Amino acid sequence: MSTARNHFGALALACIATLAHAQDANKLKVGLMLPYSGTYAALGVAIENGFRLRLDEQGGKLGGREIEFVKVDDESDPAKATDNVNKLIKRDNVDVIIGTVHSGVTMAMAKAAKESGTVLIVPNGGADAVTGPMCAQNIFRSSFSNWQPAFAMGEVAAKQGKKNAITITWKYAAGDESVAGFKEGFEKGGGTVAKQLTVPFPNVEFQALLTEIAAAKPDAVYAFFAGGGAVKFVKDYAAAGLNKTIPLYGPGFLTDGTLEAQGESAQGMLTTLHYADGLDTPRDTSFRTAYAKTYKLQPDVYAVQGYDAAQMLGIGLAAVKGDISKKPEFAAAIEKARIDSPRGAFTISKAHNPVQDIYLRRVVGNENKLVNVAVKNLADPARGCKL
Ligand code: PHB
Image 1 (tube, rainbow, N blue to C red):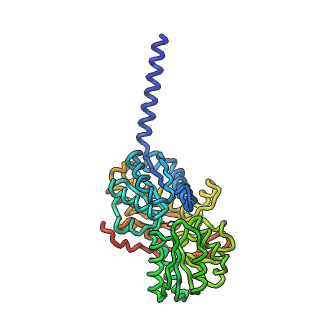
Image 2: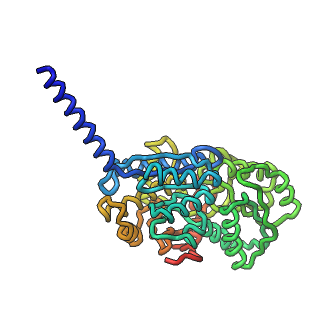
Image 3: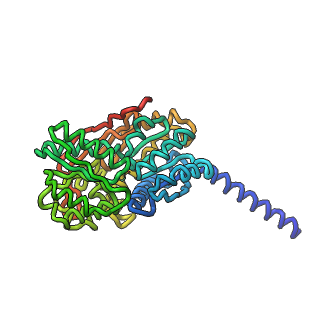
């Protein structure tokens, strides 16, 4: 009798184990490849927070499927990027990859996604190539191309009557492309970029270059830095007294998620971005309230991009009833969607990059306050994308 009971018990346990396994297999495996260390660490955390907030709002499911996360710290290191993404694709067998912040790492991810066919949603990395020559049916971006906010800032600076600018940035794809976008907008409006200064990523030794800027006396400076590096640059610029004489412009990354640390040094700065404080729409207000309640933090552009990556994944999955192997149907659903973002609703271009308003913002206290819409419905030119 007792042996029979033991057998029954063992069988029941085996059944439960099989059931649990089947349920696990039914979960959608999401690979989160983000920076959790280094100068972009806070950006990675904000993206994950935003993604999880959307997931929680949907009861923990997207397209009817529960989500299981596999996380990798990419360290914003392009040299490790191919190994990191291939671990997710080949070892962990993820169904979809979300990542990343750094343009160089993002390009390695896009290459691997293109080769394997794995769905990739980029929640920041602006590398123009990802929705340019590397564009693909299975690659999407919930953020921006490096060209977008930069081009808008070039137009704004020219409209403000600036004629002669110096640019300064980290020397890698994001900085180079941001400067190129600014130059295009600025020159179109009659300005000239006199000099392009760079420091290696993620170096923050700016002193020699600030001395050079002070001596050259341009009538504007355009800078691309983000995260910890942006905090240091804006503080050093003010400490050198340059903020009193030469206006410092940049894409909004220069002051997003950084204002508490930058304090006085950032006050009055004008930047352009696809998000702003004080949008004052019901959609943004409900997002901000929920984010602040969940994380005890104010959201920034990175949180919005993570949230919208989850929205885009949800839209695609709903259309294929959770079966992400149906790639054409998954893509078609996102292509025809209007994504109800806290930034304002946007659509996705043929190359899978957001077509979106770029706001002009001014730093007031700890906020990047909306000034106006610098460019309405701006689409990246998607140079080189053949889809
Ligand atoms: C990028 O490398 O594409 C990048 C990184 C941080 C930002 C924006 C763009 O804030």
